Image (tube, rainbow, N blue to C red; front, side, top):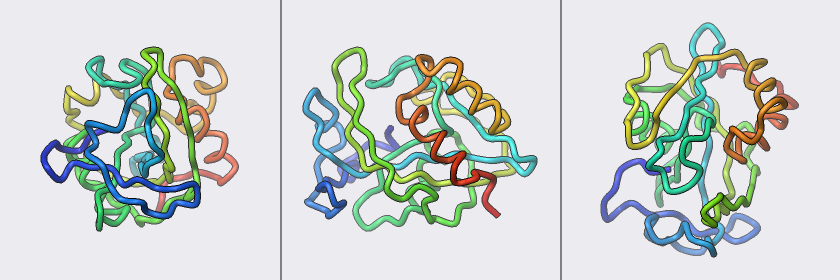
Length: 184
């Protein structure tokens, strides 16, 4: 979950209520004792209603090689959801997206520990976006991708949750309950 390195590459630390507590360099927070911080997940749709799933690069620090939602990231201080989504879509997938900037699952939160012991601990609103462009994945972020129907994503979560990111496994049933479809 990156979106470009540099001195401004940070995460926003939050408490259990989502109140901002400050920020920390992104490279220092994902450890065995990761503090609660703000992230987001985005599901990207094409005009035909298909959704993009991606396979995380093998070089990713957490959950390398697993399939997940279209892309994830961390907003920066002062950045809107829409700005964060557009920045990460360009960085990870090389494309422009349209989004309302309003999360469909605004209070989604998860904590998970990967096989290497690194903890993800995020207040992670879920957003939907659309594009009519084909992705050009950044190989540091994405090793494979597929456009699939939402019903196929739901089937995959039911059939092989072990092959997917833990946040996607938890998000998809909530998205189904919310009646997930392409924004528009």
